[in-house]
Image (cartoon, rainbow, N blue to C red; front, top):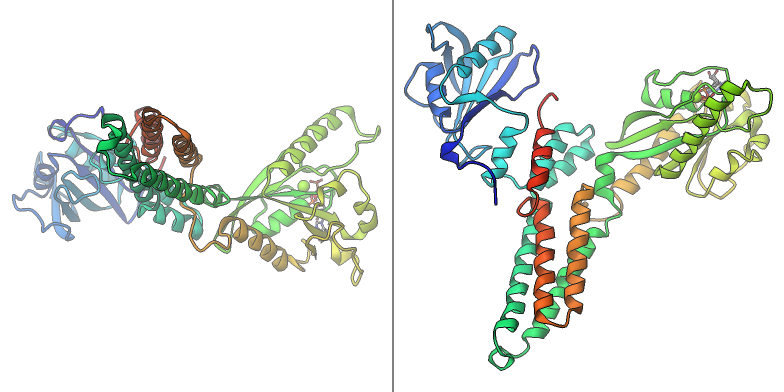
Length: 464
Ligand SMILES: Nc1nc2c(ncn2[C@@H]2O[C@H](COP(=O)(O)OP(=O)(O)OP(=O)(O)O)[C@@H](O)[C@H]2O)c(=O)[nH]1
Ligand SMILES: [Mg+2]
């Protein structure tokens, strides 16, 4: 059950939909039962623009009738609006004085107040214009930094996940009705083969959900980005490579070994895939000649580097081409080179024409120079190919799970259905199906999520 007030008791809310600050155009939205009155008061007219057609209007301060903007007004009568309520949208000139004049005129009107963060989306959800997975998709779309992320958010907004979940939930309800018929009626009164039909339905449902879960976590990874740990001995040129690839002086580069201490992350867009490169501290055995205080900091840096190596989607191991043999036998770095790691021989400009050893585990190896740029295109392409394989995969169907929350709920539903199939008594079976349906409802926000709604909606606002 929703805890929100019924629509007729609701305040009318307003807020700028565009980021604060000076802009050519600023969009101001008003939603609620008094949106029409507000629109008429601001334009000092008692006719409404045609619904959903941009209409030019002079806006005037209701107090003294002074014109403050020549604006476009859009009128979306309920229920065909973003929130499902009456919505008026003003496309103002985005100067500070203009926005302030419009906002203070609205604030002075009865029954109107400034919207809280996420309140428009909350109303869209309450009025069934969006399910929870679509609200999340909208937040993802606004935050998307790469084309791939935006496409995924669009798919979810178009309700890839929500529609599937509602379909599964409906079928679970039907299955439950079957199970309950078995509880309520003696066996001889029921059509023959009912139990067998129910079992078949459950097998199909469980298989569909399992197939959706078996997506290599591509959706979540695309949302979070593909993580690459850049590892290697001090002075190999790790920071230089990151700066080169990001086209920025993000990391400090110096001839002093042990320059990078903490893990520094740089986000890149490689061919539309979001990639996070993590620069790490060079790995080396610390001899007695290193100052004890320095050694302590460096040791912590190396501990963090190794932790990152364990959690990254890809290891890029950078070794100096001008000391190739020594680097390959270095006990600190050599173990990082498993078959999946990319080996980059850097500083090839120092050893022109040298024959470099292959990847010790038979993986991919490249010769590069972060100084001259030689081979850097191939390195970027190699990382992009790995990201594309991990995030896009060979699958024909895009992943529809984009958050751990979705995965947990789907796992719970799948487990519930599996248990239902094992259940002997129809009462038990019905109970498992009820719980599985509830788990699916958590994804669309149609059951058991009251506690998380406030958190979600308050984190969701423009220009936060
Ligand atoms: N000749 C040459 N020098 C390079 C190349 N790449 C980096 N360097 C130089 O090598 C030195 C170390 O580079 P960094 O990028 O700081 O190396 P790092 O691996 O990040 O080192 P730490 O942070 O100390 O672990 C700097 O003086 C760079 O200018 C290269 O391809 N060729
Ligand atoms: Mg460095």
